Length: 278
Ligand code: HEC
Image (cartoon, rainbow, N blue to C red; front, side, top):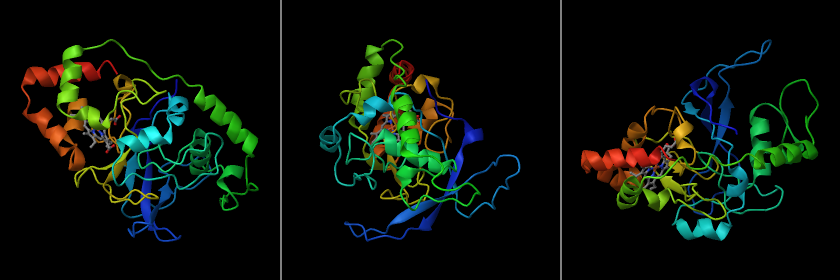
């Protein structure tokens, strides 16, 4: 089914200044350098760069349906600040609106897979002529058919579905304002619980990392589908309980977090029961 990793597999990302044309909104452009905490036998782990942040890999289940959500559906939910994909060389559909990753900048499964391959040290045809790494294998190491086959496999990983319902908890989810960002259905993806927009989440969650268009305190709304299978939560895995993950919400989500914090215990418990059905 595909799944998210635990801390042992987390990657670290550090900021560096990205080259490229100025952003349309005049804000500074940033990019990331990847740092691997582990290396295969025979390879050296590079020195840890300053200002790195842990990133939990997003689960792969359901991404085929997420890819098929029309750009217009996502745009209808996002206000100012939502970012468009920086890379559009992928396969059909050629989505303009980014939707994959914690700081989303990719709109298709093909681009997502190609980018992850490169991150894992496998240069590939889709990443363009710039796709070169410093190992001894000739670049690109895999061709576009390889990437397309892998993308087709990933698209086939089924969403986790629901494990029951809880009407009282669902009502609390809506009344606290969670469903404004964690939108239950984004057709054709149902029970996905994300608006696929980027939000300013406040200083406590900020990692200070510019990633393509997303700034230090900006993150895409994590889809809550499959939440019941996760053991580490938030972009850097800092929360091990759903309660802690909710209480960490700040910035644009501060009001929802406050509503949760201030609610009577039975409403909070109902909400947590509901979240266990996802
Ligand atoms: C303004 C939009 C917004 C609102 C409102 C909001 N969230 Fe979130 N939520 C996010 C974003 C963005 C993240 C990712 C933050 C990160 O990874 O640091 C997130 C992450 C989460 C996570 C962690 C998921 C994971 O797999 O790591 C949970 C659980 C969650 N939200 C539940 C809720 C609940 C319950 C509410 C209502 C009390 C709520 N959220 C309100 C935007 C929102």
